[in-house]
Figure (cartoon, rainbow, N blue to C red):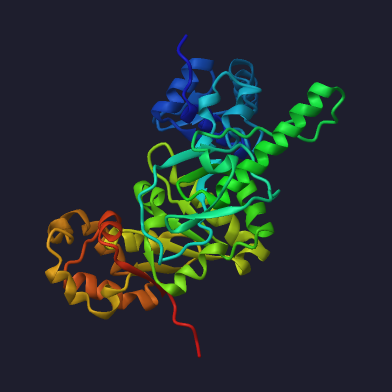
Length: 383
């Protein structure tokens, strides 16, 4: 016998919770009615009437066949692991695996004076990140500071599992395992804070805890993954550079790293009374209409990091051969239409200049040509 779809289960859940006496005789409800032999179609065949007994039968059969209780508000609003505890349809879970994680990194000791040497990007996966710190001497490489010693050569994927970290050791072996887990946690934090060519995939809850305990005052959302990987090579002005020790870079998401994670992180920062006052959200995107649109849609975004020349002398773009894509307009039409009605505030002048000179410069060009980057607040601070 054919199975019902998730949409059909949702229709049953809605009818049960609302105690609906009739529903539209749609294709889905026709299949549900045939599947469980419930309901009665009216003369016009537009409506399917359900009795209290019909609704009870539907609830009981869905629970029997799929392990799902349509009486619950969170029937599907769980992750796949949680749904798998009661149903073989774990893929129906609304919370996707990537929605609870973000890819993050920090720059410590950023210095414009040091040469920019392209690092080899490596993404480390961390199940948990704590605020334990290690004492280590540091050496300066590229334009950031890295620790010397064992961590300095660590460039492979680091898996940190502290799921049993609170268990009381009962044997010498378990004591050694606990100590090793603590070492792994310390290494994960050291990587997050000091290795500019390493990013950690961290649960959102742990990022929030880290932001509070490490006094993070700025979250910088980066649009493109390759630019995120090479963020230490960006040419930030002195004002931005001075903020980087207390800034956390977050990849906006794309591909296997869904934007849902970044979106959830910013939402939770915005909803937290402490963090919403402590953290400034900043966007680092392509210099095009789509990039500005991304910045305006980021929850709580207060400013953008943009090339300095676009604010002081946007006409300079006319001499930047093979940098500006003036024929990118047709790809940016939807974003340009959005910006016509968006609340841009202090960004309006930037958008006007970009439209006048048909500016479309991607982050890769911004990095390659070492364009000096400066901060542009969304709203001018009142004097």
